[in-house]
Amino acid sequence: MAEERHHGEAAERSQHESVQLPAPTFWPIVFCFGLTLLFAGLLTHWVVGAVGLIITFRAALGWWHNVIPHEEHEQVPIDPALRPAPIIAEARSVVRLRVGEAQHRVRIPEEVHPYSAGILGGLAGGAAMAALACLYGLIAQHSIWYPV
Image (tube, rainbow, N blue to C red):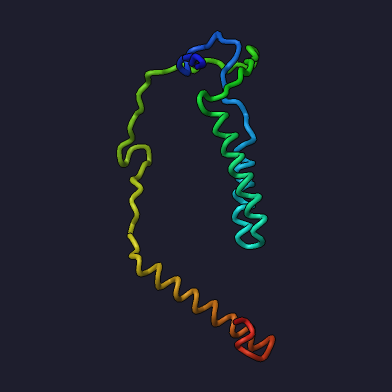
């Protein structure tokens, strides 16, 4: 089993020359392609579904072997010149504003609209759109059923 390294906290600078990352794999995309073929076979032909089932099964096995019994990793080198500067932690506190100081006001909604206002507004907007569509049909095609 691969040994896991502790890379330190955010403010610390690590002296490691590389970082261990999960190895890239193509099996998840092959698995999704197989599932796509499997479900496309439901709409097209059973052979397409059978090919999708075979691809899905093979991709699941390939993906499984990449992770079990040990996850595959790769070492990616770290360029020392591109390392970020350490984060400096400061222990300053935040000054709280009080209502009325420095032209500050509390942001409280002046009024709360009921849900029924939104429902009624939606119904009114839908009726207005239907009326305009029927008016367009009457003017352009001489029938209110054209937009429908």
